[in-house]
Length: 143
Image (cartoon, rainbow, N blue to C red):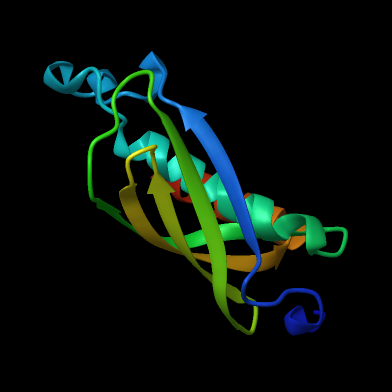
Protein backbone atom coordinates (compact mmCIF):
# COMPACT_ATOMS: atom_id res chain seq x y z
CA UNK A 1 0.00 0.00 0.00
CA UNK A 2 1.11 3.57 -0.62
CA UNK A 3 1.13 6.51 1.79
CA UNK A 4 -2.29 8.09 1.26
CA UNK A 5 -1.19 11.46 2.66
CA UNK A 6 1.42 11.71 -0.12
CA UNK A 7 -1.37 12.00 -2.70
CA UNK A 8 -4.46 13.26 -0.83
CA UNK A 9 -4.87 16.16 1.57
CA UNK A 10 -7.84 17.38 3.57
CA UNK A 11 -9.56 20.24 1.82
CA UNK A 12 -10.04 18.52 -1.55
CA UNK A 13 -13.53 19.27 -2.85
CA UNK A 14 -15.85 18.38 -5.68
CA UNK A 15 -19.38 19.37 -6.58
CA UNK A 16 -22.20 17.75 -8.47
CA UNK A 17 -25.20 19.75 -9.67
CA UNK A 18 -28.44 17.84 -9.97
CA UNK A 19 -31.78 19.04 -11.27
CA UNK A 20 -34.48 16.98 -9.56
CA UNK A 21 -36.17 14.71 -12.09
CA UNK A 22 -39.08 12.30 -11.63
CA UNK A 23 -36.71 9.33 -11.08
CA UNK A 24 -35.10 11.26 -8.17
CA UNK A 25 -38.33 11.78 -6.26
CA UNK A 26 -39.77 10.08 -3.21
CA UNK A 27 -42.81 9.15 -5.30
CA UNK A 28 -40.97 6.04 -6.34
CA UNK A 29 -41.51 4.84 -2.76
CA UNK A 30 -44.34 7.03 -1.43
CA UNK A 31 -46.97 8.41 -3.81
CA UNK A 32 -47.85 11.21 -1.37
CA UNK A 33 -44.37 12.72 -1.75
CA UNK A 34 -44.04 12.30 -5.51
CA UNK A 35 -42.51 15.74 -6.15
CA UNK A 36 -39.74 15.72 -3.51
CA UNK A 37 -36.09 14.73 -3.88
CA UNK A 38 -35.58 11.32 -2.26
CA UNK A 39 -32.91 10.29 0.21
CA UNK A 40 -31.58 7.55 -2.14
CA UNK A 41 -31.09 10.15 -4.90
CA UNK A 42 -29.26 12.39 -2.42
CA UNK A 43 -27.02 9.51 -1.35
CA UNK A 44 -26.19 8.79 -4.99
CA UNK A 45 -25.12 12.43 -5.50
CA UNK A 46 -23.16 12.44 -2.22
CA UNK A 47 -21.24 9.32 -3.19
CA UNK A 48 -20.61 10.71 -6.67
CA UNK A 49 -19.22 13.98 -5.32
CA UNK A 50 -16.89 12.17 -2.90
CA UNK A 51 -15.58 9.88 -5.64
CA UNK A 52 -15.11 12.88 -7.93
CA UNK A 53 -13.03 14.62 -5.23
CA UNK A 54 -10.45 11.88 -4.71
CA UNK A 55 -10.53 8.79 -6.91
CA UNK A 56 -8.69 10.35 -9.86
CA UNK A 57 -5.67 10.96 -7.59
CA UNK A 58 -5.34 7.27 -6.64
CA UNK A 59 -2.76 4.96 -8.23
CA UNK A 60 -4.00 2.63 -10.95
CA UNK A 61 -5.87 -0.33 -9.51
CA UNK A 62 -7.14 1.53 -6.43
CA UNK A 63 -10.64 2.86 -5.80
CA UNK A 64 -12.69 4.09 -2.86
CA UNK A 65 -15.69 2.26 -1.47
CA UNK A 66 -18.32 3.53 0.93
CA UNK A 67 -18.22 2.45 4.57
CA UNK A 68 -20.75 4.69 6.32
CA UNK A 69 -23.01 7.63 5.66
CA UNK A 70 -25.14 9.99 7.75
CA UNK A 71 -27.64 12.26 6.01
CA UNK A 72 -29.59 15.10 7.59
CA UNK A 73 -32.32 16.75 5.54
CA UNK A 74 -32.60 20.46 6.37
CA UNK A 75 -35.15 21.45 3.72
CA UNK A 76 -37.08 19.84 0.86
CA UNK A 77 -36.15 20.05 -2.80
CA UNK A 78 -38.91 19.74 -5.36
CA UNK A 79 -39.11 18.44 -8.89
CA UNK A 80 -37.30 20.80 -11.28
CA UNK A 81 -35.11 22.47 -8.63
CA UNK A 82 -31.32 22.40 -9.12
CA UNK A 83 -29.36 21.24 -6.07
CA UNK A 84 -25.57 21.45 -5.73
CA UNK A 85 -23.86 18.76 -3.65
CA UNK A 86 -20.40 19.79 -2.40
CA UNK A 87 -18.12 17.17 -0.83
CA UNK A 88 -15.04 18.17 1.17
CA UNK A 89 -12.39 15.72 2.34
CA UNK A 90 -11.98 16.64 6.01
CA UNK A 91 -9.58 14.02 7.37
CA UNK A 92 -7.53 10.94 6.54
CA UNK A 93 -6.79 8.02 8.87
CA UNK A 94 -4.70 5.36 7.14
CA UNK A 95 -6.78 4.28 4.14
CA UNK A 96 -9.99 5.79 5.60
CA UNK A 97 -11.28 9.07 4.14
CA UNK A 98 -13.82 11.27 5.91
CA UNK A 99 -16.01 13.77 4.07
CA UNK A 100 -18.48 16.48 4.97
CA UNK A 101 -21.12 17.26 2.39
CA UNK A 102 -23.59 20.09 1.96
CA UNK A 103 -26.36 20.33 -0.58
CA UNK A 104 -27.80 23.72 -1.45
CA UNK A 105 -30.34 25.25 -3.76
CA UNK A 106 -30.63 28.93 -4.71
CA UNK A 107 -32.08 29.75 -1.27
CA UNK A 108 -29.64 27.87 0.96
CA UNK A 109 -28.62 24.57 2.54
CA UNK A 110 -31.03 21.67 2.02
CA UNK A 111 -28.93 18.81 3.38
CA UNK A 112 -25.79 18.05 5.36
CA UNK A 113 -24.02 14.72 5.47
CA UNK A 114 -20.95 12.85 6.62
CA UNK A 115 -19.50 10.02 4.60
CA UNK A 116 -16.60 7.64 5.17
CA UNK A 117 -14.88 5.94 2.24
CA UNK A 118 -12.05 3.42 2.27
CA UNK A 119 -9.26 3.11 -0.28
CA UNK A 120 -8.97 -0.48 -1.54
CA UNK A 121 -7.27 -2.42 -4.28
CA UNK A 122 -9.97 -3.16 -6.85
CA UNK A 123 -8.72 -6.65 -7.73
CA UNK A 124 -8.36 -7.68 -4.07
CA UNK A 125 -11.89 -6.42 -3.39
CA UNK A 126 -13.27 -8.45 -6.28
CA UNK A 127 -11.33 -11.54 -5.17
CA UNK A 128 -12.87 -11.26 -1.68
CA UNK A 129 -16.35 -10.79 -3.16
CA UNK A 130 -15.97 -13.86 -5.38
CA UNK A 131 -14.68 -15.91 -2.45
CA UNK A 132 -17.74 -14.89 -0.43
CA UNK A 133 -20.06 -15.95 -3.25
CA UNK A 134 -18.26 -19.30 -3.42
CA UNK A 135 -18.74 -19.76 0.34
CA UNK A 136 -22.44 -18.90 0.03
CA UNK A 137 -22.83 -21.38 -2.80
CA UNK A 138 -21.25 -24.11 -0.64
CA UNK A 139 -23.72 -23.34 2.16
CA UNK A 140 -26.65 -23.63 -0.26
CA UNK A 141 -25.40 -27.02 -1.42
CA UNK A 142 -25.41 -28.43 2.12
CA UNK A 143 -28.29 -30.81 2.92
